Length: 446
Ligand code: SUG
Image (spheres, rainbow, N blue to C red):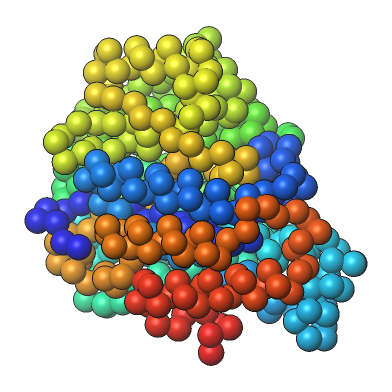
C-alpha cells in the first residue's frame, strides 16, 4: 500500500484467541473490576477488526500487528512449571492461576504500548526509529517486549529506512509503556514535529509528591533515553509530568487523559501536574502552532474521563480533510460527555464524532487509541513495510473468516489450562502468519 504523501499509519493490534479478563493491569480500574468475568474472544477480535475496517473506509491508512503466541509456555517453564505442555498448564493452574493468566494474556492487542516510534522527519539521521517498551510494571506485559521487537523487525526490515533499538533497560526506575505516553505534534505529517514525553515518576520511587494509590508506570528517564536514541532535537522535545491525582483516579497511561493529533491537544485540565508550564512549553516548541482544548473538571470529572475513556478516542484526518473523533460507545451513553462532544463539533474542534463498540477491550481498560500504534511513513518507507500487514478488502474478508473459524465465543478462568485452547491458539496464529505473509515468526513455529 503506497500513498503519494507522508501519512500516519495506524498499526492496530489484532486481538488474540486467548483474550480474557484476569485483573492484571496495575492501576487499571476496568481490568480490576472485570477480573474473572467470562470473555468473548471472538467478539473482541471482531470489534477490533471492525474499528480497523471503519478507519480504512474513511481512507485513514490502516495496518495491523499480529497477536503474541499464547500460552506463553516458555514463561511458565521459566517460572518453574515443568512436564509436557499439558502438565505445565495444569500445574500452573493448580499452584498459581494468576501466573497461568499472566501467560495467557492477550494484552499485546494494546499496541499503543508496544513501542515508541519517531518519524524520519524528526530524527537526526532521517530514519524511522523504534524502541520497544519494556513494560516493566507487570509481568504479563513485560513478557511482550521480545516478541514485539521480533515482529517490528520483521515488519520494518530495511535498515536504510528503519532503526530498531533495544528496549530501555528493565528496571523500575526506567519504566516505559511506549507510545501511550508519547505524542507528536506537527503541521502535516511530513513536517518536522515536536514530541511530548509524559511521565509519572521522575525519581527512584521515593517521590513524596507521587501517586499514593497506584503505581506511576512511566518514568522520565525512559523518555530521556528514547529521545537520545532517536536523535531528536532537544529544542523540539517536551517533558510533561502526569498529575499524580489523575494516576490515583485510574489514569494509568497518559492516553487515558489526553490525545493529540497534528497541532491539536485535547486533554483534561487535571491531566498534568503543572498544566500552565506544559502549555507554555508546547507553545514555545511549536512556535504557537499548538491548539489546546482543556476540558474542565466541572464538565467531565476525572472519574467520568476514566469510565467513558473520552480521551482515549482517536483523532484522524480523513481523505477529504475532515477531522473525525473516533470515540468509544461509552461516550455516547454518558449525557455530559455526549453534550460536550456536540459542543466540540459545533466549535469546529472536530468535524464529526463517530462511536465504536469495543466492549471487550474496554472492559480490560483498552479503548480505541490503546489499540493502535501510530507510525508516520514517507512513500518510500511505506514501500519498505512488509506488504501483508496492510489492511485490504481481501485481508478484511480473510480475517473475518479466520476469526470465526478459530476463536471461541466464551472463555473463563477455568478454560485457560485447556490443552485444546493451546492447540487452537497456535493453529490460528500459524495460519495468520501465512495470511500476513510474514513467514515463521513465533518460537512454536520453529
Ligand atoms: O496495561 N490492560 C492493559 C490496558 C492497556 C491500555 N493501553 C493504553 N492505555 N494505551 C494494561 O493495563 C488487563 C489484562 C487483564 O486484566 O486481563 C491489561 O493488561
